[in-house]
Image 1: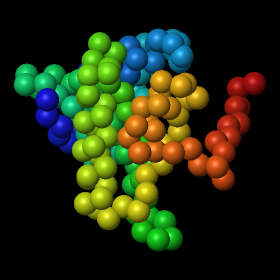
Image 2: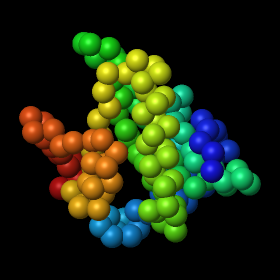
Image 3: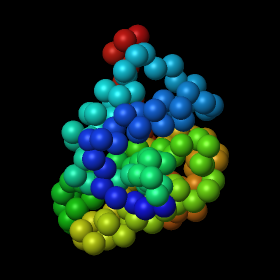
Image 4: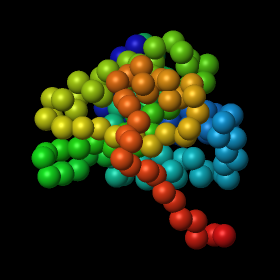
Length: 148
């Protein structure tokens, strides 16, 4: 397995992985035609300079990670926008390899922190904790829906 910068040629494969992973519990998402691809294309447009794919020896995408980097008062901070691994390859080290690569990359840029939003799903939370993340006690994620 190799990790490299994401390229436009990877987007369709990333969209298929996203659709596959998010259609399962606990998300149970139902995607309209091309909506996963449009979502991935938007992430690539906004985050592509700092995003990566894990590929096998045939350059097939196994998983991906999108990062958004911005300045804050004490330096650069990152937001982990998405990390998704092919469901058939979860718990094989692909996600961990993406996280390690990303952490090294962010530290090489001098980033001070990285944050993420995650579904309150125990296996997912355990994955992030194993990779050094912790729940922030002084922050909350809030949403407002316009379609209700």
